Length: 112
Image 1 (tube, rainbow, N blue to C red):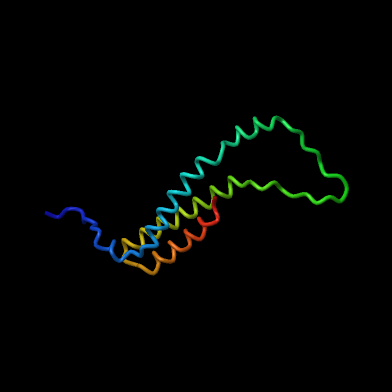
Image 2: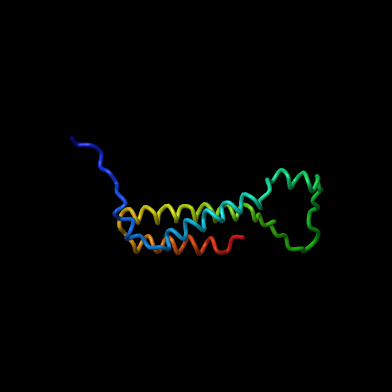
């Protein structure tokens, strides 16, 4: 007689269309990132074992930028935002859903 509550999609129509757009964009960017990012071992093997020299004198030293790691972090953050937007839709909080969807799309628009 008393079963578990059933979550219906009644809150779904109140969900802003940007949430669906952010979810679609995340799926597309995730798929393209898997295609374009070769594994790190492949890159290291392709370059061979190059020796790195220490800087001499007053030269500025910059750490190499790890583009793949930055892309992975952006995808992870966008995925969290899209998930939170979906949760906000289920809670019928359209304002929070919209804010999270916009933040996710903002992160994703800079990824190739």
